[in-house]
Length: 295
Image (cartoon, rainbow, N blue to C red):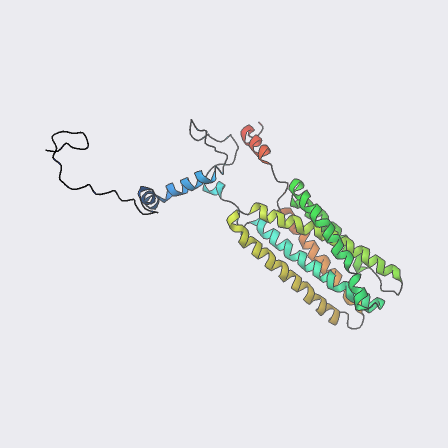
């Protein structure tokens, strides 16, 4: 009787090698069955990997720490991030579409103003539109940096007010042969570019800030689509108003067009209170959660 390899004497050896243990295929095993039979555990495991998304935190010794009095309650409704149907996201998308409408309506109206009322050549009229783009190019980087500290709401309200005043100035501008009115139109176009630049960049940043990562591609697609749609509406409005209201007097048609752009900016200002305000830093949020509301 051969000795047993396990060290237990007196047990006969069967004479054949033991079958090797097979490794279970990937994706199987108790972990998979547990996740399939208990989907709630799978959600908890996913939350643990992603980190706490509520005022509760894992202490390491005592388990979950109870949130402070007055803090946001933990649960599915509180932990649910914003999606494309929330008011802040819809307001951001609508504002960005109206930015395209206002920008492109003024962009296509200014060359017509310089050609029809001042007699400039198409190349000169195109160069005189440069203040609009220069104002937007200068304002957008500054607005993007300020939005991280001030939030989108204040910047959109300030930039929209400046753009509205400049567009209203364009509704009162004359069409005399002098160079003074052409310079005034260029200054107003620069102000419109600066104002809409302070509207567009913070709005885009706020959309990417409040959307969860998995919703960013969807939100950016909707944002770009509505921005181009707004631009198309602005260009089509230029063609319609210049050919109808400006059939006998081009200046009347251009003034009507500037009133249309002013109405689009007014809608931007109406939607601005629903945009996100100043972002709260991690240190401020943890301090407020630990302190709770003042008694």
